[in-house]
Image (cartoon, rainbow, N blue to C red; front, side, top):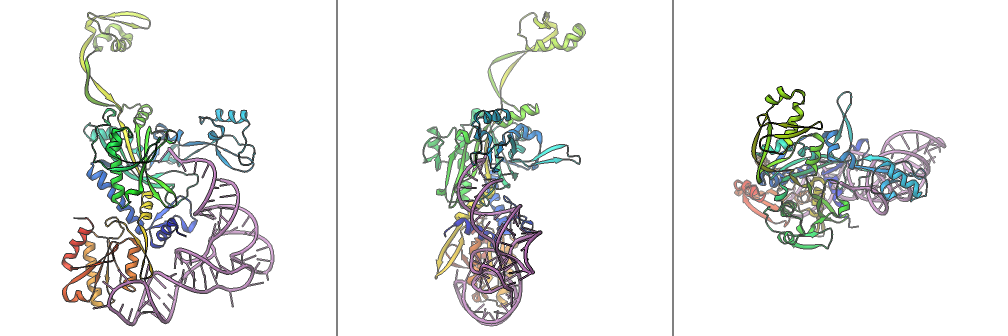
Amino acid sequence: MNDKYKKVMELCRRRGFLWPSFEIYGEVAGFWDYGPLGTSLKNRIIERWREIYVKREGFYEIDTPTIGVEDVFVASGHVSEFTDPLVRCKKCGSVFRADHLAEVNSSETEIIEERIRKEGISCPECGGELSNVYYFNLMFKTSIGPEGDRVGYLRPETAQGIFINFLRLFRFNREKLPFGVAQVGRAYRNEISPRQGLIRLREFTQCEVEYFVDPERKDSASFEDVELLLLPATGKEIKISLKKAVSEGMLAHSLMAYHMKLIYEFLTSIGIPGNAIRFRQHRRDEMAHYANDCWDAEVLTSRFGWVEVVGLADRGDYDLRAHMRHSQVDLRVDTGEELGEMKRVVRPRMSKLGPVYKERAKKIAEALKNAEFKDGGIIVEVDGEKIEIPEEFYEVEEIKETRKIIPHVIEPSFGADRILYVLLEHAYDEEEVNGELRVVLRVPPGIAPIDVAVFPLVNDERLVKISREIAEDLRTHGLQVEYDEGGSIGRRYRRQDEIGTPFCVTVDFETLEDESVTIRFRDSMKQERVKIKELRDRLLKLLGRC
RNA sequence: GCGGCUGUAGUCUAGUGGCAGGACGGGGGCUUCCCAAGCCUCUGGCCCGGGUUCAAAUCCCGGCAGCCGCACCA
């Protein structure tokens, strides 16, 4: 049976990419340990991501706690929206989404239960009686402090850590928009039934960017044009240039296109073929509670079809507005842009108002601020009484009104584990060589977990000595090197092919005569002879390090 | 979470009440001048817990995990 998922996962377990977590105590679904090769590969994928987003695009990378206090997730909507109302059949135990079953657009207990009672809804499986509505929240709950009185949640996304730091970040960027903030870290979701290997995990790694932008400037992004496969919410799949997609209104604004281009560039640069990538727009009813437009980058897989690996959401001002409301902190940004005419503002003089109006002074001051300006005094209404306030009790200032906004957020959110899996699946290749099966992981140099393997052609102490020296030298120059002298040379090549090592350096008897070695290429199996002193530079070049 | 099927060395697999076998892999050795060759040798396993039985990897119950379907999937 030609099941690539099975083959890739078997290889991952066997060669030390992935192991089921807690194995000796019994595995738990939705958790995986990364072995040495998997860890190296994952780190390299993330490092490439940083090269693009943090180093080249200049987004600020921050790192915030994985536990959040309750307020954060009450404000963000995760406490209410990440909760599903459920009912259980008292007879057969099946569990259903209560709101779906009752066909109501509400998650309130009373509304759902009333509907279930009225319509006489019973278990769709066995017709049994249904339980009361109960709630399941996808967030892991914990408590903070020795008394456990402060509720905390393991974050379901890294994004909130960025939003709640918005003011600091904005000042850090010297109060200018737009700017991007990146974060790489773990997120946690207590999935009801995780399956499918790395596709649905309970603890996973996200690489997220929150790109803050003036809502009126979403269309001024410039980007390099590229043809992508787009699947709009209404309409058919189409291969189209991003510039055209923007001009035809398929994409809401050019910032979407800019981020799509970056996502595509990243995915292809780690080795996912461009023709296996598409962007699919969410329908209104499948959108997350915070999003008002969302395009998923999906990668085609053999077993699961198109799999979402990156979510690109226009979160609008949802998050900043929500935190502003909940925290009472003003998160608006003054654009400094003047709006139309000058505006006159009344400033009460408290030092004069106080002695005269005593306890009413405060109310009068408030009324003055909101009062309409008039020459020669202002009439204000306080406690139902009209009072004329002479000019000496206030100052009038003319100011220019500026445009204040809540920035909008464009969020590309990468699932590192899913990306690693789809990469492996596309890299996995089998071919026949001399009647034998050769398994090759065609992962690009620089992303593959091992950079180069070094071998003595045969187990001869002169060759072994030189090989070890070469391996040591390459290691000190930052390469991930594997040294191997066991078994036949062919076996050693195959071993490296299977874990994706792009280059093998072999020391042979010719080396003893002219100080040259061979570099053997994983993909072509061809060899190239180089002098030992040129080896390091040659490899660095092949790995794209210089 | 529900239902069905399944769980034997690192991986793949045979065995179905009576001593758990193989292949590949891995370690050591021999051999070997370039693609999983060969020879010798070692290593290592019945998912966990309970029950039935003189005897359980095998039968029963529970748990855990995997696969398929349903539900769920920000």
